[in-house]
Length: 102
Image (tube, rainbow, N blue to C red):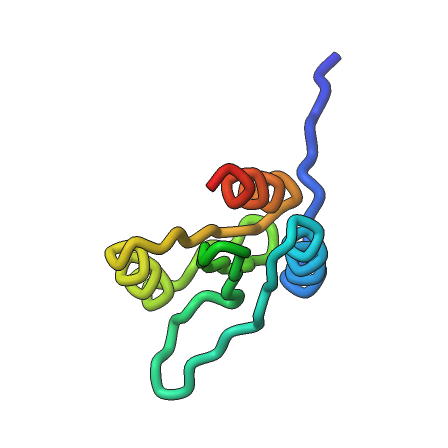
């Protein structure tokens, strides 16, 4: 007998809500971020007490960032910022754990 493991699909809206709640729980703020005139910026800017700043790209489970988003993520990472791709409860938990450990 084979057991198939399934991954629960989560949409962007639900993951964004869960991220905002989780960040608030650990003492930070999560802002919806748009940048008129500069496309591809991550969906959320996360600011933590003590000056920590992070970015999160939220995707429906299994989806990947667009080529433009990938370029912008690399630009932000080149400036020293961490960019998280969140598409599941697991990647959300990993993001929160990483922020907490900074």
